[in-house]
Length: 177
Image 1 (tube, one colour):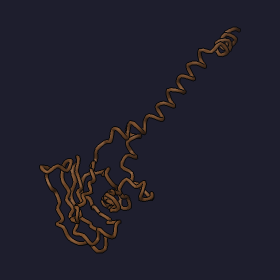
Image 2 (image 1 turned 60 degrees about the vertical axis):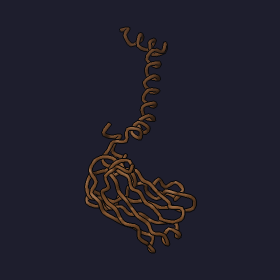
Image 3 (image 1 turned 90 degrees about the horizontal axis):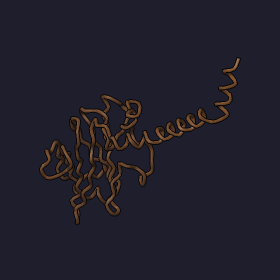
Image 4 (image 1 turned 90 degrees about the vertical axis):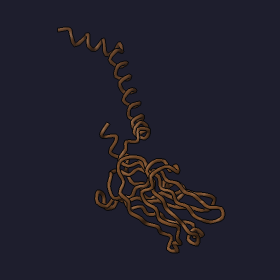
């Protein structure tokens, strides 16, 4: 089980915007979230699966140029993003003409939500759930199903082979002196 767990927090790598799990889209507006923990892995980039507790740098890229002309606020909460969740970090609405918003926050093990609000007409609200140092059992199960099925098929084939008449005849011939 530990071997299967090692890749669950891997970075998402170089993929197109349409396939990138860190991109959120509302209409034509798109934002991208990247999380970094350079104290543990200097070059790794994460999205919603954060591998360790501790200081985490969150970087929001405003892909849509129209968002750069709107005031944008960022809120990091402990929990699922409901109104009663504890706010850990709040960046008040401001303009970001360079298209980049960055902040640092300390994260413990558990669930968090990053809420990005573009205060246009109508307001746009992008949401990212974060899982910090938690085992994603659904992903672990999906990654283990393929090898498990192959193992079961090989076991079944081995059993059938051992019970076949040719193998039994071969065993009989070996037992005779």
